[in-house]
Amino acid sequence: MKHIRNFCIIAHIDHGKSTLADRMLQFTGTVDEREFQDQVLDDMALERERGITIKSHAIQMNYKYKGEDYVLNLIDTPGHVDFSYEVSRSITACEGALLLVDATQGVQAQTISNLYLAIDNNLEIIPVLNKMDMPAAMPAEVKDQIVDLIGCDESEIIEASGKTGLGVEELLAAIIERIPAPKGDPDAPLQALIFDSVFNSYRGIISYFRIFNGTLKTNDFVKFMATGKEYNADEIGVLRMHQEPRQVMKAGDVGYIISGIKTSKEVRVGDTVTHVERPCSEAVAGFQEVKPMLFAGVYPTEADQYEELRASLEKLQLNDASLTFVPESSAALGFGFRCGFLGLLHMEIVQERLDREFNMDVIATVPNVSYNLYTTKGELMEVHNPSGMPSPTMIDHIEEPYIRAQIISKADYIGPIIKLCLDKRGTLLNQVYIASNRVELTFDLPLGEIVFDFYDKLKSISKGYASFDYHISGYKPAQLVKLDILLNGDSVDALSSLTHFDNAYPFGRKICEKLKELIPRQQFDIAVQAAIGTKIIARETIKAVRKDVTAKCYGGDITRKRKLLEKQKEGKKRMRQIGTVQVPQSAFLAVLKLD
Image 1 (cartoon, one colour):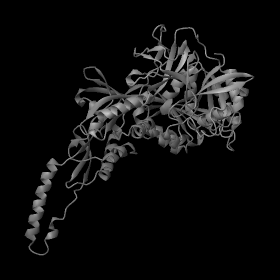
Image 2: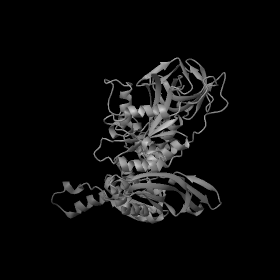
Image 3: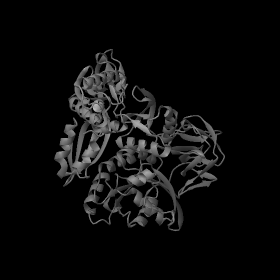
Image 4: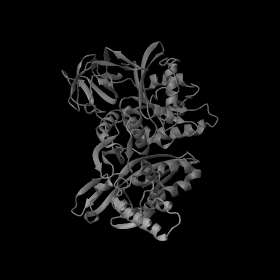
């Protein structure tokens, strides 16, 4: 065990984690030139297209140092705030972390939050200054920021470049010297933590685990503690570029187990695997349940695909444990699921993965956060969905979730950033200058306000420099109203939303104007209305398409034309009574992107 090192790479988005991992894999000879491609660990097409890491990826490397052979288990993690749950799981399986800081950008918000995650788990931190080959690198300034942040010695910071391979040898030496070997007893009862899993249509569910105590052999009879199910370990092995089977794995090892599990409910990420004959006394601690921040309805476009959508979501949940879902139904869209996401990017990625990996075409409703609602009888209800709200006479007051947000930016953009946060009903709590031209702002913001387009706006007003990180700080009373959208007097529940009273009028008006553009014209007038309770606050009318019924009358008496027009009018009236309106998917999407 003293020759094993388990470590992960943590950093803010776009600081070069995956590129540095590439160089380490090449330097240790883990990946040969024929198989190599940039960001070799990002194996999902979506990750390669967008240039972001969505999943944590584990891989084993062998390295000879001072005449001894070492096994290095590397986990490359995502940097975006929406995937921080992936990072927390990777950290549980490691003893050390490489903290990567971009030499051109300096310390950013997600760097700090990922660092705190690692410190809470008592990981050994190795600070690395990446992108040293860039002309815009500011090594002296950024080193000062790192020293302030983690209180290390300046000589401990390793200068590296993921692009050129500078400092990789020094980095591998530091991993072996500084990161402690895993602790654990190979002779104790088996105790292994599942930190990820993936569905394979031929082999069932493949679970990735880290052994803390004990020894696991092929064909051992094992038990999953959370579900209580028992299986044979048909195949165990280590994760290299491809899965490599092994006969025996001991404490400290990271690898995979295939035991022919077909149903996704039987594997829980964070579960503990042990032997049936000689089980361990307790499960691995330190694993928290995920709390979704954002809820949206996801419905199949075809009503008969409901069961397929359920199966697809279950398989996706295996690979993305931060996704939660419960069944719900909607008058406009039929049966579907109310899904919980960690943020808008997460929601977008899940929709995209459902489409690509499972060929599921889905409609997503307007996302909203969960509110605490107190009734006049003093009962507490959790409301995730506007349609689940009782009538206004039953409501005593509503509390909405607030977040504590940390924004780090250049001092030049401080004015527009504060204005943006104040427009979103935020409160400025603190303002600290980290360096001469870098400032950290702390705000209290309602979560419902930042769900839609806050991150995009923040990036554009700060020219991409501001970084943003948040955590839930609690609930506060708010003046919220349910905004209904009516088409010809019928409420479309998929478009209704909970919004703050001050925003309801402008938001309702904008939705009506947008829907007027997007809903195709019919043979009858369509009234598009926004309402709070029974009070209509905005209206647009989509004019009818008129067929020219008088085209066949050339010349002759006006009464002949009049007769035809009267007949058309009667028909229009009748059509209006039975006419229903088709709302295209683009209308649902456009509401999300409303300014």
